[in-house]
Image (cartoon, rainbow, N blue to C red; front, side):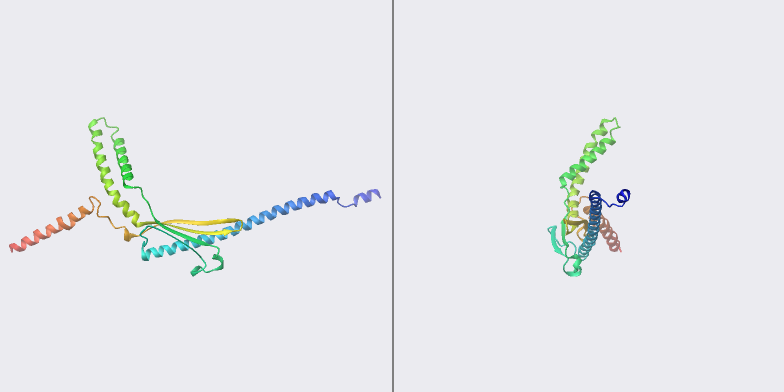
Length: 235
């Protein structure tokens, strides 16, 4: 009887408490894992939507540039809005807001670029003449480098102005909030060129003057006047 009662008795309170603790720990870990998976899937869905909205705003700006060109003379235009109206009117887009920034590119000033170009030319000339033992060759390289550097420096100013007028940096930013993760954003930066503003500057040395003199006046005009006019007069 004693053996039968020992074999048929149930779990003790301590064993039940240990089993419950193990079960609760396993359920807690499973719940945390599922919660993280759900949040990650929701974040991926929201980010995918924000990426497509960002690309859509970028396409809108590109179409506007194609039709109207760069209309901002100041070179800096910032706009804000949301997706509650227009073609994006949908309940899934209400949490998103957008920001577009169109600004000019800022190149270094002409003096810094001229100094860098002059130093580069002089370094190359010194490297090329380092193997030569003639002092006259090394001394004659300095004025050449200075002349090239000054010529490039006079060209950098008009080219710098042309590039700054014809190129715009466009930043499109889409922002939204998530439960437990506020201030989420997707940002895209692109560069656009308006060819209507990229006209060749007339102040470039050796380009505008040479083209005008050779083609328009000296070669074509002189040949047409002397040959045709003289022959007709003789007849």
